[in-house]
Amino acid sequence: MASNIMEERMFYSFKEKAWHSLGQVSEVEQKAVEVLDEKFQGGFTTELRPVVVNLNGEQTETGDFAVVRSKTSDENSKEVVFGYCSKLYQTIQPKQICESFDENVKAPVETMAFLGEGNDMFISWKMPEIEIKKDDSIQLFGIVRTGFDTMKGTNLFTSTYRPVCNNTINLAQGWAKQNTDGKGRGEIWNSKHVNKNLLRNLGFWMSHVQENAKQEAGLIEDFFKVLAKTPVTSKEQTQDILKRAFPNMSELSNYYPKELKKDKQDSIVLFNEKQEAIRTGISNLFDGSGTAISMDLWGIMNATSEYFCNVLPSKKPISSSVMFGNRNKQILSVVNVLKELVV
Image 1 (spheres, helix red, strand yellow):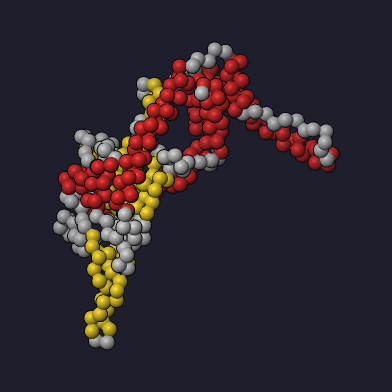
Image 2 (cartoon, rainbow, N blue to C red; image 1 turned 90 degrees about the vertical axis):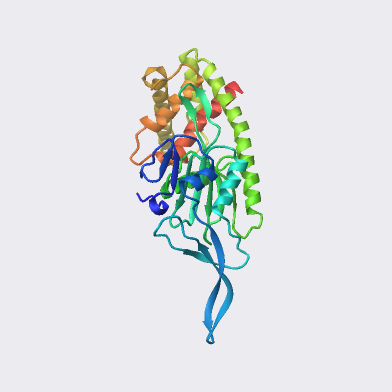
């Protein structure tokens, strides 16, 4: 898997070493401007230069511009043309993005990198962590991604994926697109670089998403802590929760064409058998075969996650289904039942 890290050194990570082993790992928290200046030696700048052609024997400006990246501190570095644009294009400097991040997010950098020849940059930070119990938490990352060429704009989103390279930043943004709820999860904001107010608006949105995340994290954490404090007192209670989350399909009414009745009845029987298998599988995990399952509503939720993530067989990789597909919906069906019980 190609990392596409610029010059194989312009990657920063707080504490955790990335799979590609490139760049620099820091044991101390750092601001984005500090990473840019100290780890990436200032990075680079961009500017617009008029495009000139030889026209009728004279060097003539076309009215278009080239987006030019400066040299970096690398001894072999050269200037690079990122693309061509009109005078409406607004050049954004990496340092401006870092300054806005520090001013508005007010959190240390988790990961930061330039990709390609510097066309693409991302900064990630840890959103407020939702701690349920000791050693049991949920983590989202806030991510700002900026393109310095004429193809990419600036995007702000949240994701469960920690970006460390080209593939993981795309994976993180893909997760965001699939999990946008309009309430601070998934895609938050984006803009093209013809927007004169891009930096200002980006700052407002970064500040907003961070503050909103703090409030949301508090609400979610309170909900999960209530689950962890609510004991399950009987097997009947467990079965009632699971039957509400994974109910059987009703039997056919008499008002149904006899020619279609057998096929429909067979499908109902098959569906109900699958529902029973799900309920039994989760119940078995909750009753003792699961991993560190507590005897409370939080334990039922964890037993559900373990069943769909680790027990239920599949012929295909399940990661997509757990994040976006049917397994995700099935896990959420238990969450919705638990909400009704405690909220």
